[in-house]
Image: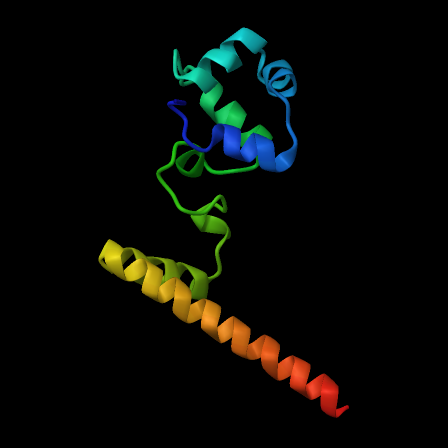
Length: 118
């Protein structure tokens, strides 16, 4: 298993091949393959290049953050919500996510009803 938890998830999401990544950061495809299998990990010098190429934070790349968006790109409300969420016990995270999903569903249903009346 990869020592860089989100590396191959992000590459898959963005349609980036191992060769494309290797070419960009100056590594071999064998190195990248070894990273995927967990045989080795990128050097400290390569990690920022990888994060930049994939347009994610190092923390997200390494599995230390739940969002790929760097914290300095979040607005004040997003920062506050993230901070509050992180203060909750882990068992409460699903409750919060379901509450937000419920609100989004309600908003969608209201929009549908509004269109029907129009």
